[in-house]
Length: 527
Image 1 (cartoon, rainbow, N blue to C red):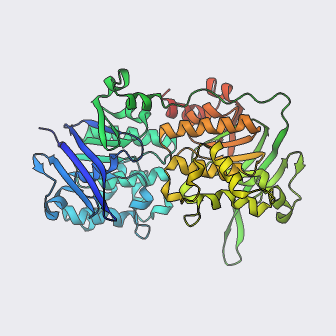
Image 2 (image 1 turned 180 degrees about the vertical axis):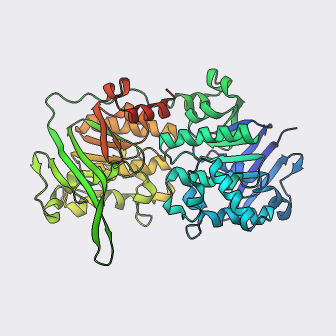
Image 3 (image 1 turned 90 degrees about the vertical axis):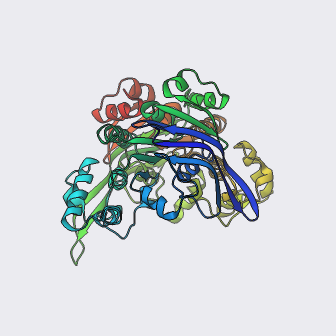
């Protein structure tokens, strides 16, 4: 008997008097000790399918079909019966631990709550169990971290705490919904290894939801490919990867970063240069706020980027990548030389720098967070024109329409708001907002990390085309080495504020010198 059997599952949502289909006719099974991966782009119905297994959908959802856990029907079951299964037999790990963990409660309190609710464990017994769980998921010196709050832990540690909470009641089935998407490649590899170890030692079955086929290849026994709310193909992982039958599966497998950046034009002018750039934040203590030390966010960074050239900056979270970019843009204070188009920026006041801002633009990681929800697309894209007084005599609407066509957006949609677009379209809007000012330097801060693989490829192709057309200098920040290899001419590897390795993309990828670079390569490519 399968641990979980799903037959002809359909889910619709009632909204504003309309019926919106989300999942249609989905069927699959998970056997004891098996890992089944649900794969597909955002909006394909993966998470809705998973949440419907234990009745975690909103009240406006209508579920039909059959979901049985150990022969017990979950669809239409009472709240009391569902509660017995949730957390006990079937546990969830979600994508973003900060939205799942209570920021006002310590780690100990949050784990203790689950143990008290489901197992009746309290006091010393609960504390011992919590320490055991944290040790099991690889949190060092677990006893000392019991009083920590979520914000005091790193991203990887928070995700480990989430896994510990999921394991607290000895579940049989673990549902992992994009548990590694927001993590660095090295942390991602650690979490995947941890899940594989737990599956083996605890006898767990695993439903793994992801859009990353590299992870699926590494962890899954069987694969279900979802598109538009339906499973279009399923079978053993080896078979799916070796001989995909459905065109959509073949499309997903082909969505890997390929090719390289356009060649740097002959005699290209240097756009930006730094020498011995440092960003040290003082550590102050006591009533008089005496400086007792420094956080060395960036320590001695020297770089040069020419027109039409891309510098890839890689490293784990906290390595100083974004701080370096902010210092180059003169948005935070630093020491050391920063030159833009041959002009030393150190002596420039903030008001004097304002004239250069149109030539230095940023595209952020999260397009939804960087776009105002109260402004139309036209207003968002045109905002910089008014701020910088660019081409006041020209028709703004025509300029917006032109840049929208250039980034692959339909100008007819310019009166819509950001929430009416997909993640990839929102990132194109953010790129259009930067490009309408015709900048010389663009900082791209993880511009593809929150996107599906197919959309990542499209955005990378768009950026390369814009660079070739306009001779843009890119500083491309990422922890995804596949994207960097496809985009960058030069690579700089950062660790804890230090530049541990730099050189041409080919040299760094084919013959890495630093142990840290080798560790990143091994985590990213499985080498």
